[in-house]
Image 1 (cartoon, helix red, strand yellow):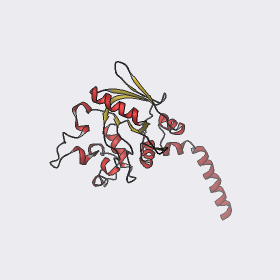
Image 2 (tube, helix red, strand yellow):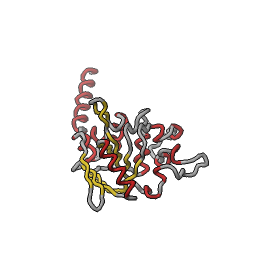
Image 3 (cartoon, rainbow, N blue to C red):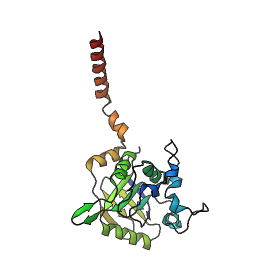
Image 4 (spheres, helix red, strand yellow):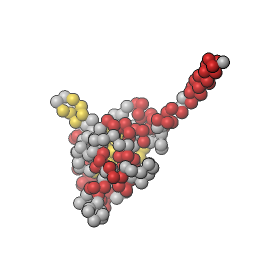
Length: 215
């Protein structure tokens, strides 16, 4: 996967909480054994009407969100089944980062993303960012007020910057291990291959032992 350092793009908002993976990519599109072609069907049931034409009332079909690459949504994004296709669809549509708010419920922190969706995102190079509800509310207000607003997501500095006459900046936390993997563009296979010399050495010792025992 591609390394993630910094990304600047148009911000789109999806004002919906508890968006599950069947809404992100409906089950009828999971039949393909390929990992391509999912972006055009992202949020299919919301994006298109019964006649197959784009629904003008759906947020991402608005003209000012065309070409957006940073998605801001509500709490518990990516809940439901564990399908990795949901992350593929988000990425293939063109989004590089998704921002959602964490919540404080009776003193407990509730994450903005479902765990499995978050883990699948890390494995595929999609940056998921959690901000407070008030910060996400502020982004929604600015995007509504200033059409086609751009933002920069800086992973090194762990900041989201809205580019206005007076820039607004939001700091986000991220696990240092996940940050390192995203910055270096390392998926599970690449992480395993970092230990290739040790694996090769183990296989040699194992083969030698098996050969000795069979002699």
